[in-house]
Image 1 (cartoon, helix red, strand yellow):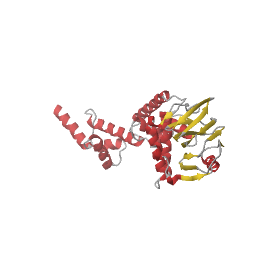
Image 2: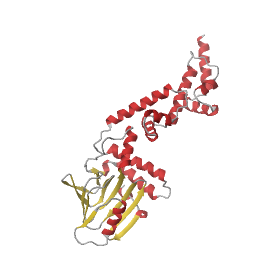
Image 3: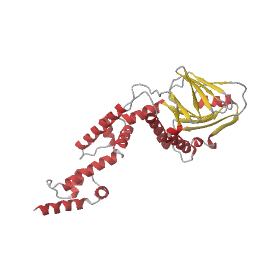
Image 4: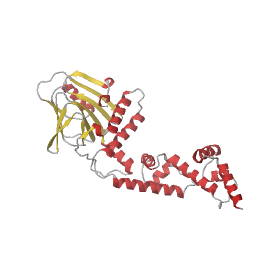
Length: 326
């Protein structure tokens, strides 16, 4: 899996001067100071891709190197060790990352990393606004405080789904078929996976319950206005959330889109009406139109796909039941 993180098509430097590679990293990934411990050879290499708002970078300096920074404003970095090892200083504590391990560096957090001569790393640079947006999609509101990931040392083998996602993102951004919309989709997935799978300072359990309550209020509102042409935009305004958050809410709680959910609820009401012996019904068309189905042919198709029979057959079954009771 680790070998699939950026291929030859993403190579920018090979057998290069470490300071030349460092300057490229400063321009595209994050501002830092490079200090080499000993003499350097032109053996540095670097792969880089821009994937939507995320930067993907695979590099090695070819010599023991120390990287320092006062903090990368507005961005988070994941540092994966592919080969060799890395010593890092955070919170006045020195720890070590070995091959197959990674660390998340928070926005504005001082950096002091020392790489072994044989160290090769994979860096993922993620804008802070992506994480805020992912939290809002999950929980329907922005966090009050800034995300601060805990300084845990993670093993890639324990987070296989996250690694698969990074490998897929690398493949997509290197392909000719990658579109801005597709890469934005992957960006949202990466941010969502991070806030769900990695340890941080913001609890999700409270917000999840609020998300559930919001969804229940939306469903109740829809039931109360079931005969109107309720749109996704109207539901988003009612819940005071963005349209994107609304779609995420329906995907999470109903496994479908707002439009399909609304249609399903309307079909259920039509079915219950057709099967209710206490409701006087002259014909199916009147009931369908009453619930907003103006295209009768399509309505019949949706109805049969949902309940296995045509609406006329439901009405006929109701009438047969009524006659058997007489």
